[in-house]
Length: 337
Ligand code: AQP
Image 1: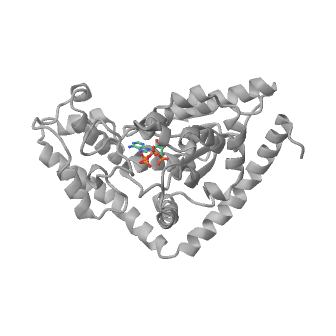
Image 2: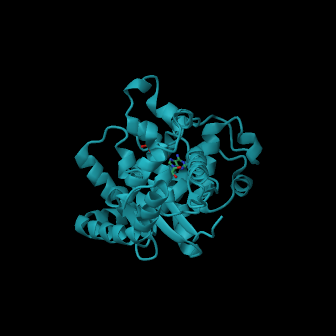
Image 3: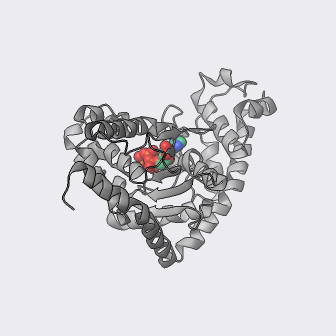
């Protein structure tokens, strides 16, 4: 394989407000990669992915800018990283078409996100929802990204990205696309719903109490944790004992991730404690971490023109990478240029 420039890419859908799941599973990891400085870092608001399910246009515009504010407020620096909105870099969608012709229907049909989101009525789901992983592969490979930090739920899509890259390279007899590595690390790779510890916390869950939004105020955060589903037993002293208590395990994982410690260290300190007290400690910790972010997001949202300028500049920098990679792809495929 050729030596690829080490590059990190990841994205988040502006399909609602940012959740604590997005923050712990994705954004904090993005900030860590940026701080390491070993790789070029590219972070994206994936608006084209958001419209695979219905979106109100005004809400989509607002959510996209708010997501950008969330990235900035959490520590993404638009000078050190490239920060973009997907539809402003057209090579993502152009490469996705090529990948639609590389990926197989059977591969897409096996994706658990497709099965979950299309539900019982797959016939009525959009073609875009079915093809979602090919667009995601294009998002990643249009930068020749070598590493993708994601939450656990996206692992299967990264594996499919590797399948698409391998098939393209094989079919055309080239070593053009890298085998991208998923990076899934930490205590909160899968933050669960506060109302059901067996389901992922999601920004599009109709029950607002199931998630912490980055824009929630201190009282709302405390109330949501207070009402989080748990059981009457005290906290155990070691992680193994949480296997059968998914709701409690979720809260402990969130606490560990927010405090930057591992789960065993948290349990050693909290063993025997009542859940009521633990929920209060967790709420205090979450408020201390999230309040400065939501204040900064609100400040940034007062100046949408500045957000738009940052995104326009990001798109310009991104296209210095994506245009040559797309052109080379077209040449390999046999398009007259
Ligand atoms: N609950 C979660 N725990 C850990 N990581 C999570 N991520 C999302 N939810 C959790 C990670 O956040 C990144 C962006 O995800 P996305 O918004 O593009 O799509 P998603 O995974 O489908 O997120 P949602 O909140 O569930 O959105 P909707 O409700 O619109 O489908 C990814 O790295 C993801 O792993």
